Length: 91
Image (cartoon, rainbow, N blue to C red):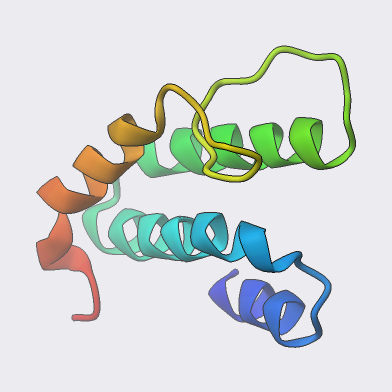
């Protein structure tokens, strides 16, 4: 999955201001793969859902987990989770 995300970013398919969210999702993937924690899948889903709603201007409510378009109220939840699991990054 990380390879697919890198491919999208390298082809300029992803708007530049979404790259922060893509970087956080890649970190969550690494943590989830090494820690076998389903929480990462939930957070990735919520970030993707927020990006979809924001980018496509849907009227749906958001989880508030993405940084794109001025960010969401629950970004700190993801940041704190990543900070608390840094030992699983780049092992």
